Length: 234
Image 1 (tube, one colour):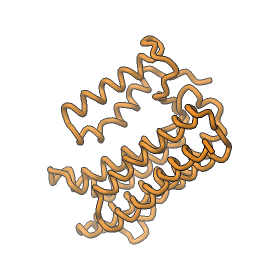
Image 2 (cartoon, rainbow, N blue to C red):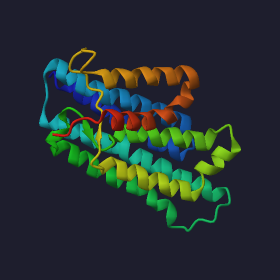
Image 3 (cartoon, helix red, strand yellow):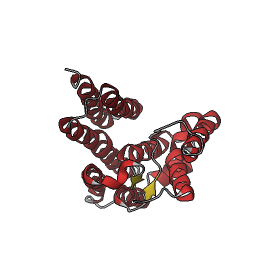
Image 4 (cartoon, one colour):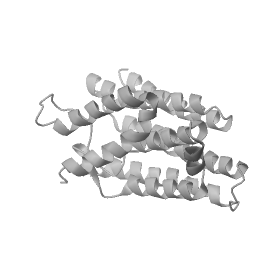
């Protein structure tokens, strides 16, 4: 019976992803962002609760990947697809097929999740950008594009060249053989977790300075710190 609790949390992650897709296509981008925020919380809690209750299962592992595929693969893909459509409404001359390039994101997310499930090297750190982190990056950029205070920034983000670059770069990062920091704390030892504490501290500082706008800087900061501290590859 204990396994019902983490599985329910995983299904809550999936439900948030489904409702986020609906929110995107009803142009309620703020609601979509909130739903993805809750999906991230449920994604963290299901694993945490499973470890706490000692109810790890193969079913739970597979269910988690399926939920992540929707919330952190399909949703960001549809968000970029929507940005392409907004770009077309703004008068940009875009070939009709171009918005569908956004679906590279869910395709590479599927590769990323399948690879993660069988890659034993990713117990201490990640190899390639995790799908939740990729979703944070895409959604924060999208919100800047839709609600940006600067018209120049909005025009840049909604430009088809930028959207193609965003799609290709994020898809590449999902499966790239690049070791990246994991925020999994196995102890509170300062020396062992120095990079993690620095990352968390800098994220807090960014939020204090930029508030919600800090979201767009978090993933680039994460990538830079990962390159600086260079997690050891097994």
